[in-house]
Length: 202
Image 1: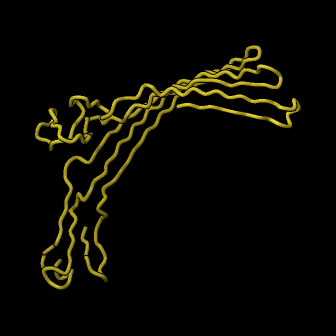
Image 2: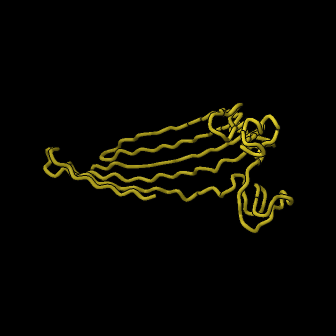
Image 3: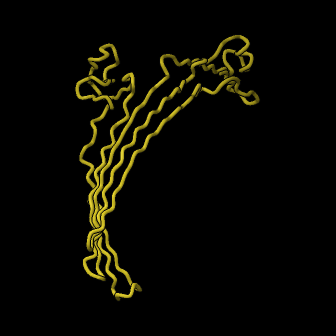
């Protein structure tokens, strides 16, 4: 891409953020069961999701030149002289294959205590796993720590396989319990005035 830093000239070539392509497959499996027994209505269920995200995101792979009014007083003349004031070209592997999954379970009961008073209570549990990369081409920053997976990497850059760095860079959270409880009271008994209250906790 050529960029002329002067009014009257337009940029030439592909944008700096290319080439870019994303292909994604998402799979979602879920199921639920309802069981009515007496004054209770029980519900149980769960689900599992799996994502495949294949990304190609290049940055300045074709080169990025900026021509200005230096060394001559016209940016197009600087271009003709072949004298850019700035040049950038990205290199390396711009392909990433990301994979992620999560599952959840829940159970709840709607209990009609009396004709005018109903309560609902339940518990939900979720485990979202951090995204991994099929070739472990991810990293994170931890100041002052040297990678043992790539000893020549700049200090602070850590990769999957380094001490304390799992495949998804961060540990999977396994404590996502979400209880809830609610009440509904038919004040008049005729359905004309209803008072409800609910408490959700994550």
